[in-house]
Image (tube, rainbow, N blue to C red; front, side):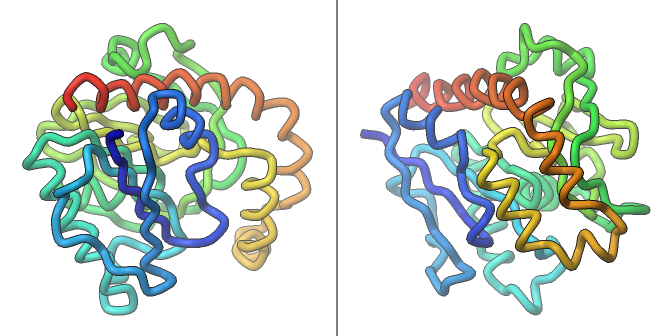
Length: 236
């Protein structure tokens, strides 16, 4: 059975529904939690794919979180070996930074439910083909990234120009979240309650809108993550 390595940065930001896609594709998962002291692998030997999840730290916080540099070296090796990569939120920023793009704080944080617009390239992408070009995504980020040189822009929001991109044929970065469940959203609202207060965003309003937006977002995520998982099946 092929194994996908998952880099997790905080307890509440788990694979969520990505786990269902990996299970359906008969892929095993090894989760590495550097915030608990687990070591980042030196190379991609033994793994057929790499998923890098979200977290509260920034790409530029290497002095406080030295494992971020090790993660970028692992991403670089996965890129060189053309193994499928999926970066979510912080993971997309780490992927962009590894590819040489700048990652900087945005003018304001983008948190909650906001529309995502696919680009023309996104509508033709093999992960996104057939998905409606405008849908509501779940967001929780303060940093933004430039589009890496040679990457293909896949989606944007009104506030953030680059919400998703593809590099090559197997590496994808999604700044917004499609993997979330009701439980994950609830845990994020609780865990990051101080951030919400500082940003003057009502956590209860985020929770209230779950029934309106989460079911369709999970359907979209199921399609996209399922297609990503099949990338691994196609090259193993």
